[in-house]
Structure formats: structure tokens, C-alpha cells
Image (cartoon, rainbow, N blue to C red):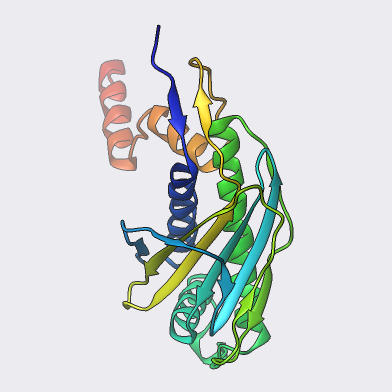
Length: 224
């Protein structure tokens, strides 16, 4: 009898960390990394200077929080906007502006969207997300978010930007395990992976110089 494969909360956390790194790296065209050491925590909190959070439910329930320092928020904001073609002179200069919060909310939405897609692909489970919320928090204020989770487990992971600024991901979710009873076909739903696969399978393109040589050889065969 084939040995069953079990995926735990920490395996799901790794999927979420991968989505954070992928989305932020792609959006900012900078290197985002995260610590291989995961911290077990007793509760998830919004922390200074900007806290972003989103709830999801369905196959399992959970809460995702990303706490940005002012420095990490501004670095990601500037890199993202300049990558989109925004002149540096028109960028916001304070992390408390609506532009920065809106940008982080948009990226948070993309992160959780990529995560839910991966969960559906890898675990064959559907989860839904609500609209991300952002709060600019005073240094003396800490807000804890209560969620109705079944034997909640909480984890905290530190991320580092290209300029060595740090932000933190926190995940609280049901204590659960996914047990793979047998192999199954995984339908590819990630458009980025589909495009990459098609690009690898596409025939090599012929350059203009190569085409000119081909045409010349053909004309020579015709005696022209």
C-alpha cells in the first residue's frame, strides 16, 4: 500500500510565503527574501507602521496579516510605482498617504489571490477571500484581530527587501492536515505558468539575418 502524504499548517505557510515573494518581486522588480525560520506566536496583531490584513474561508479558514515598517512600505511603494512608469517627482513622500495604503492593499489582494489559486491547484480545495484592509498605526497602538477559528495556529515570518528593510507576515488558520490518499491530475490554472510553458514549447524564432540567408539560398537554387 502506497504511503499517504500529509500537508500541515506549515506546508500551507510555505505556499503563502512563496506568493508574497513572487508577487512583490514581480511588482517591484526587486529581490524579496524571507527567513527559513518560522516563529510560533499566540496571536496575530496589526503592528506599526502599516498593517494590512485579509480574511479567507472555504475549505479552511484563516487570517493573513502583513505588517510593514514605514521604510519597507515606502521602498516597495516607490519601486512599484517607478516600475509602472511613474516619475519619481510625482511619488508620495510619506507612508501615511492614501496612495501608499492603496498600493499595499492592491498588492495584498494579488498575494492572497495567487495563494488561493495555488491552494486550489495543489490541495484541490477552494477558499475565498474578502477585501484587504489597511491601517496606519501609531507606534503605541497594537490591535489584535479576533477570528473564529477551530484550534487556531499562528505563525510569523520575517521578510527582507532589497535594501534590507524588514516586514512581517503573520498567518492564523485552523489546525488542519491534508492527507493525499492517491495521485490525481492537477489542472494548470496559473496563467503565468501556462505562458511560460507555452514559451518553452514554441519553436525558435528566425532572426532577420537568418531569414535573409534562407531567401538568398532559395534564389540561388532558382538561378536568380
